Length: 612
Image (cartoon, rainbow, N blue to C red; front, side, top):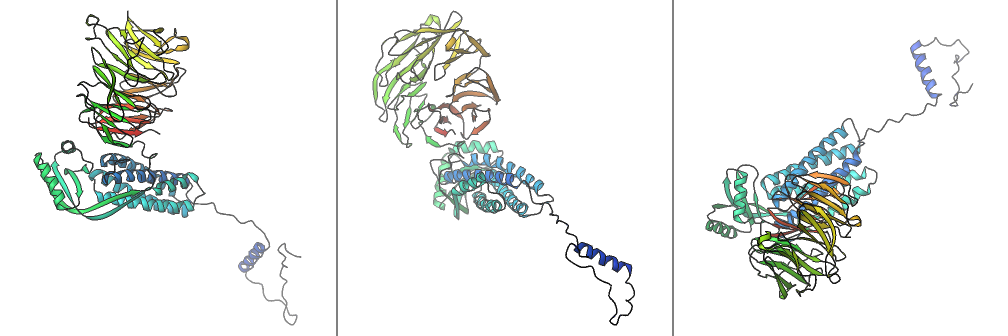
């Protein structure tokens, strides 16, 4: 008989000479031989042990890539600030805020790696653990820089990021190809930041009892970009580094002239450099441009494309900057400046308070005929398509007994316009809004109601009625297509579809501000919330904050929360991102194309952001 494996069963051997067989072997040996032969004659399939490598490696790798990309971009911005660059910089204080948040994210990521690595064996697990250990070091040194502003800690952060990218590359070789991960690695490693060490001198001011005292001292010094406040005791302000002892001594002498005591210390200093593409996408929450404006600036205006900047102060001093950030003009107007605006082509601009003047750009030369009111201008806007400046003002006292208010109009070059200008209004004045087609809407209060009227300059010699809304008017806006009007009165916040102007819908109690987005989404700003309404009038979402004071809308809604917090709100779901304004915000606007946010910070800086 032949076994399946092709082997014959062994025959019982006989003696060489035909003698009887030898005595039987013990049973245990026979059993073992039988088992061996059975195994040889049976084809059992091999069992493959299940993989014990980390199964969450792909997701954890992506998360690590996002962390490293954030650090790479913010390192680029901080290196720019520390090397006195003018564009795409991140101040040490702002970097500290971001670094603290990233350190918490790293802790959560490390916990995830620990969970994924338990009872796992393999190259993915090993490379994940190595990467996580390096990220932990990165988070620790980032936190150290955030707390003390130590350049050596920042130099270590740069080194950790470089090593992190290499470890992430190593991990990616053990994973299935992931285009998102590969893109993050390519993008992050394109931002090149380097640190070089040298002996430098630092000026230290303090110590102070609290961080708040140290921050107050920093403001008194002028908040130079190379200054930082330590976040742990002793609380001091560090300025520098400076190239030599003489340069530091000059700073000490200057501070002494202000009554501020400081000292110079010699230590290891670092020089930071950056190269590669600008991380505009990653740094959209940070300023894209920062300009020192005229003193005591309170107002800001942007050209339609956000490239030209105009600031104005209560004292009447204005400052005009071109797209290259060059100061082109310093026109002086009358005190009490309340309004600024550009024409759509940025060839002209208007500014003023009780008197509005019209000037050319870039020279800043006065043209045309000023508009003179009996009170300060409450609104100034440029109307597209029909191309004119429109301004409103209350009566001399704002009360009926004091006289009427007025709406004035001028061509871009300040030339007076014919009917229906000037438009006489009730003493409380009027609110105006404009459509892309060039229609002007006017809201006035009389007899306990708010009347909304419309006209097209150059075609209509008089206003025609659109709608009447309950209450005394406070604000008026219209979507760009001219299909929907919204208004705030003392009785509520209302929406009117111009297809049926007799249908007035009350949306909410009186809110602080209203504005339409470029997609006709309506935003209502109240003290602690922003609510979004779709073009059909349905409520989309509400997001909350502490103290909403101002609203401007472009690609995202932008809100001044309190005095020093600037937030951008996603149109899809109301998610909040904080923008790095870096001080007290006096004014906020958004360019007509919706891309650029402009703010006045600390009454002396124009700070711009580019919305994604």
